[in-house]
Length: 122
Image (cartoon, rainbow, N blue to C red):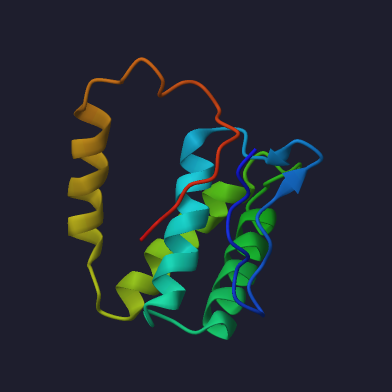
């Protein structure tokens, strides 16, 4: 199996088990890659990311999220959106339009299958 290159020091490791990278759904791998790449490109510091993700999780728990792990990457989505808006890199209207556009796309034959291959974002 091909292994992905290691992440720079200070970034989280790709979630993995003995068989390799583990994500329940393809979008989880994609949001993981987007966050890492956004940080690497200077969109936000890792401290800003950790603070935002922590606040997002705490707010979700306060709103009744049972925190069983099944919503973890949704918190990544929410946190990335919040950071990108706060940094002026996008706005809520644009994100809503993109969400609608993606939801309207026909699904491919593999969109429902969780993959165990790494996502490489260049």
